[in-house]
Length: 108
Length: 118
Image (cartoon, rainbow over all chains, first blue to last red; front, side):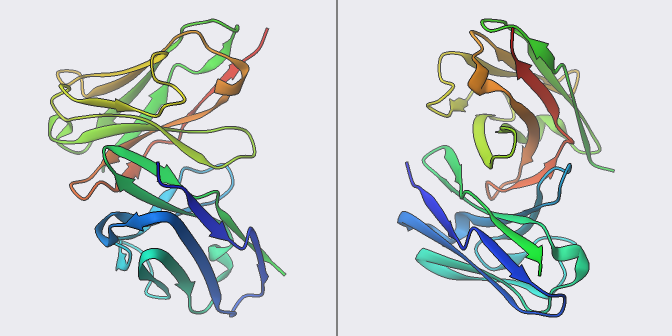
């Protein structure tokens, strides 16, 4: 099973700041099957980025994904108040999915 | 509008066997693989199970293999999760999710809470 480790656990930033979230895999992950999700309190997760770098429908262009192999990054260029949430990376391989433990982006 | 609506959660005694349901609408249900993902209180997301569009292929996380059974009724556009031998650590919000052709979970329900306690 591929383990995804996200860092940092919590990111304390202000609106307008740039956020950089990391996701490291224990083994190589296919770029095609690396996704990022956003979850706000009391809500279901929402698909943000798929294929490591492709924005899902409705994802603002301030969100971007990058990376390959075992290292992936989600960048939020300028934080909007609605972006303060928990972000999870996810990978698919061999008929199973795994999630990272999440990074909370909180208001400083 | 594409929508998923879970039901069937509640307070369950250890060893209990509830069945969760997920009613789908707004898309061709039989053409989509479907999955269950759970989230324990204050914790992260954990993938639980997946079923193919036709229902003939199923896979499970090791943590639930042998205790949970995913199924679907395409005539009713409904996904199910039969839960058996429940333990306290199965306490969680259970989300159903539609799996797209790239193996992403692109539509999620609002979740149903299962609390295992005596």
